[in-house]
Every structure is written in C-alpha cells, then in structure tokens.
Length: 407
Picture (cartoon, helix red, strand yellow):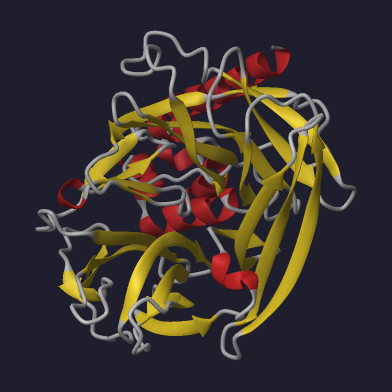
C-alpha cells in the first residue's frame, strides 16, 4: 500500500512539474529520457499536457524505443489469458503480472479483464506480439493493445465461408507490424487445403492488403505460430506426396521485413507431433506434452524440439518429466515457456471456483510452484461470463510488453 501511494505521489509530482514549467526550463532532448521510464497510463495523461509533449510520446522513434525497453527481460511483463465460454461461444481476454523467477512473495496476483469477442466463425487469435493481439473473424479482424485498451479494425477481407489464416508479425528493425493472411483452398486430387491468395498488410498509415511477391512452395497452413526476432513461424504441410493422406509436416518461416518465405524441415522423429510453439532460450521450440495416471495425482512430460539453425534444419531435443501433481482435481495443460527463466506455465483446462491458478514448473530443480490469479473465476457482473459453468482455458501467452500504439 505504501509503495502504491509513493508511486502515485511520484507521478503526481512529475505531472505538476510539467504543467507549471515552461518549455524552456527543460532541455527538449532530456524529456524523452524522462518519459520512457513512465507507465503507459501516465503517458496517456501527459498527451493532454501540450502539443510538444503529445508529439514526443506519439513519435515513431519514441514508441519503438519504449517498446524495446518494455520488452527487455529486466522489465515487468504480463501473461495474456484467453478463455472460451462454450455456452455463449465467446472468448474472454484477461492479463496478469508474469511471475518473476525466484520471487517467493508472488503467491498471488490480480488479473485485469480486457474484452470479449465472438469465438465463431473462424475466429483467429494471435499470440501477444510485442504488445499487440489480433482477434476476430476474417471479415472483421481487429488488433488490440491491452496497454492502451484500444483497438483498430483492419481492412475487410472477403472471406465468406472460406477458411483463412492470419499471423501477426513484428519487424524490430523498422518497427513495423505486419499481418500475413492466406486462404486455404481445396486440393481436389489430394483432398487437403493449400495456401493461396497470400497477402500482407502493414499496420498504420492507411495501408491496404497487397499480394506477397515471394511465392512459397505449395503448402497447407496450420494454426500454431509465433514471431521471434522478426521472423514469423507457423506450422504447415508440404504438398509433395502422391499419396492421398500423407503429411509432410514442416515449419514455414516468413521474414517480416523482407517478406520472404522459407521452409524448415522438422526431424522425422516425434517432432512432427508438436501441438504448440513457444520461445525457449530465445529460440523457436516445438512443444508436445502428454499426461497419465490419476492415482494420488498425475504426472506428465514435456517434449521440446529447439531450432538451433534454420539454414541447416538443425534441431536439438529436450525432454522433461513433470512431477506428480497431487490432489489436483482438474486436468492441466502446458501452455508455454517463460523465456528468461526457463520455466513452463501449466493451467487447468476448465475454470472452477474459487480461484483460478497457474503452476510454474522449473525443470532445473524439478519443482512446481503455484500462483493464484484472482479476479477471473470470481469476476462479477461480466456479461456471458458468470452464468456459464463450462469455461475453458484456450491459450496463455507470456512476455506481453507495454506498448504505446493507439494512444
């Protein structure tokens, strides 16, 4: 409580100084250095101080610098939760602080509710990509910034009853966000959908959809995807087989800056069974998990295939056996890895009262720690939420950083 009062007093003093001091009393080149350490909510208020301050905060270079700092491992980041109400066919978005490794005081934290959207038809949900989330059906795609709680609508894509895939990527060099969009049609002879009409959109400046000049090899896109260091990765199947149901599973990569595609082969062993993509030690990792045994709890395992070199298709394999989770009534899933700590985040598949919680599994010492997330299962007066007993955990994305876009 005292810390919160001190923080509010500090922000108030800064705000008072800004309002009472003339522009000539502070060198302009020092202002960005001061502002970059402030939270988004404070900067949103400072936009109203004066046009020069508004111009600084909304400046493209300042926005990029702010994102770089908030994305660093030393800066507090958040988890983004997506839940589905099966009764109402809705998706609900929450966020909470990301538990820091070794912080034993963080036994609980409070979640913030963000928004609700329809889960049908063909709703796409992207991971948190440097502070932004894309959601919605192809005809009404939205990009949402949890930091500012504002959304922008993307230009309409004519996709009536057509299966489409959307992947949000970020170029850290130019500071551009790009949306990759492709239709998945039907291959009559082999009976599986191939990507066609591949388009890209650069967010901002009134840009529109345009065709990608670099044509990737014929492939069928899949949903697991992630953007790491300016490269967008997503799962796919190559169209190389003459047999009807053979699947040549690969990872497709798309360089967000150059807009070039590449194919990364996956090992023929169990790597082809991956169900999620995550970031592990700064690299792409394909993740597959399994569970078994409910007597006195249940145990499971995590199988990772880490991309060591995309050019040579080199992967390394890591396997972890989860300790038994005693006295757990709900079935847990492994959703992601925390890149800086090496921990994995587990959560129950279904939401049950009284408190939703996540488990952090540390493979280094084979330990599991629980963190209660308050404000989710006990959320009151939220339409379509409280009256549904069948709510499922859809996704958990780590590393969400504060972003100034859409202020």
